[in-house]
Amino acid sequence: MPEQISKKLGFIGAGQMAEALARGFIDKGVVKADTVHCTDPVPARREVFERFGAKSENSNVDVAKNSEVIFLAVKPQYVATVLKEIKQHLTDQHIVVSIAAGIPLAAMKDSAGDDKRLVRVMPNTPCLVGETASAMCLGGKANDADGDIVKTLFNAVGTIFKVDEKLLSAVTGLSGSGPAYVFVMIEALADGGVRAGLPRDIAQQLAAQTVLGSAKMVLDTGKHPGALKDMVTSPAGTTIAGVHELERCGARAAFINAVLAATTRADELSKL
Ligand SMILES: NC(=O)C1=CN([C@@H]2O[C@H](COP(=O)(O)OP(=O)(O)OC[C@H]3O[C@@H](n4cnc5c(N)ncnc54)[C@H](OP(=O)(O)O)[C@@H]3O)[C@@H](O)[C@H]2O)C=CC1
Ligand SMILES: O=C(O)[C@@H]1CCC=N1
Image 1 (cartoon, rainbow, N blue to C red):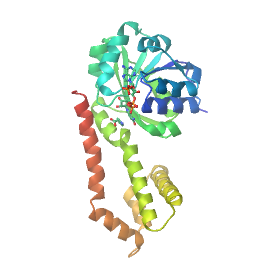
Image 2 (image 1 turned 180 degrees about the horizontal axis):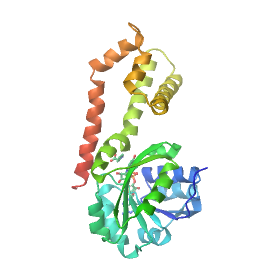
Image 3 (image 1 turned 90 degrees about the vertical axis):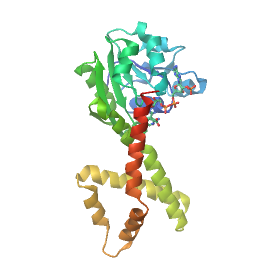
Image 4 (image 1 turned 135 degrees about the vertical axis):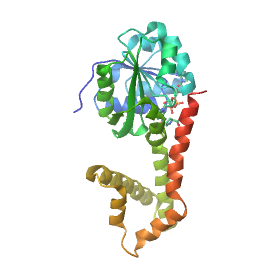
């Protein structure tokens, strides 16, 4: 059973990532549903939160007034506006956690004032199933105890690393956006299975379970992925024929380029 935190959580923006976080925290028991508050201009999004027991508020200011840890879960270009809107209602008790890609702590400080406890986190959607890979950094007047609260929340739904802020765009390019690359890969593997004659549902389950099991082997054994690949690859066998085709198509370069493209885009978002 994870440690519980007694802080009220607020979500400004109740979109996809806010939902994954809120549901993940509640499902893991780290917070109670009725201590979670949200706002969103879209009624359907507020209703999603209400259905799992959270409270929706009429304004961003009301979320600030009713919560102690405030997640800014709006698109990056709205972070400054939202911070200016709630600034007067932020006390020295509030921890403001931005999950927006690309928006630096310095920009948050400009909008919220330099006396605020600010945190940046780059989460990813698998927090919904307790398997996030996230990273965080502290800014403004945030202290180690604030960092511990954020760590407690995220460790309940996976793993969180503390990094220098300058690495957060790279984290965004790898693990923030990464689930999408893996979903594309699972879909493509399943397509391959279907092309080879498997029924779609079996192909999809085999593909997903293969990714899950392989990831678990990397984490549990601590072995280099190349060594684990070699264990699958019999001389003149089937696997090396498949690996050869991946190399011929530039699959490695494609993954590296995907991470770099998303990292570059995260840096661009800071300049919008
Ligand atoms: N999705 C992901 O996997 C990840 C996302 N993030 C970050 O999370 C943030 C949200 O992303 P995501 O959940 O995908 O986006 P969504 O568009 O799903 O959610 C954002 C929500 O905020 C609402 N919103 C817009 N303006 C305001 C406002 N002024 N006050 C309150 N709510 C507002 C939006 O409404 P409307 O649609 O009307 O604009 C929308 O419902 C982004 O900054 C992104 O960089 C970080 C890591 C992973
Ligand atoms: O696509 C995006 O911009 C967000 C940030 C990381 C994942 N999703």
